[in-house]
Image 1: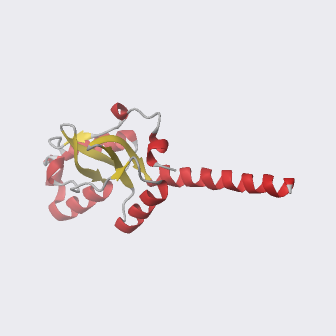
Image 2: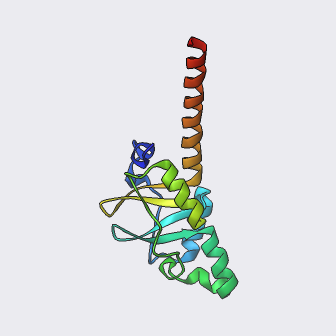
Image 3: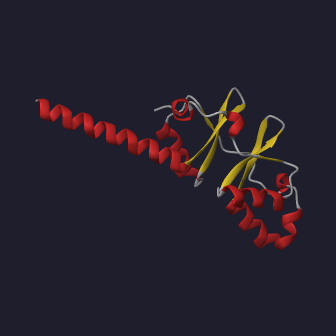
Length: 143
């Protein structure tokens, strides 16, 4: 299945994100309030990076609590590792595995069309395997 099909029906305007100039303290509150682990960091209409729980842990270990007053653009992971709408779920899972990440902005013509997590991809894959198993059961029963 292609990523485009996975994000079909999702409105890009609904993607929870932050901007490069937001203080880390506000971004952490946003992560906690929405109960999410990462979000894209935007610079205008372009994805500038990703800010995740890992970024926070690394920066607190490095800088202490003064990192909370920094703009997120100074402490985010950049550039963002992204996936295109034309790529498959398996390709995205492979990328996440190789790069040891759990979230990917989905880009089309340079603009963000979605934001997917490893959970989205695993659920999609499990649904696909379930459909394949049912098709095999039906085939075997009709043979």
